[in-house]
Length: 55
Image (tube, rainbow, N blue to C red; front, top):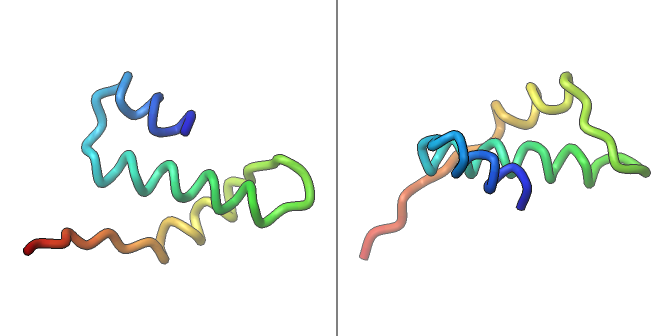
């Protein structure tokens, strides 16, 4: 949630904001204690794909 709020404040593109938020929350969940590691972020970011759903 914090990364999305920061993205809104920085007027980031919605897709980039979502990827950023997903990277941080995934990295945080992968550790026993709240921690975000730069190497984890880099690895996670390459695996996230955002696709637009249309009707």
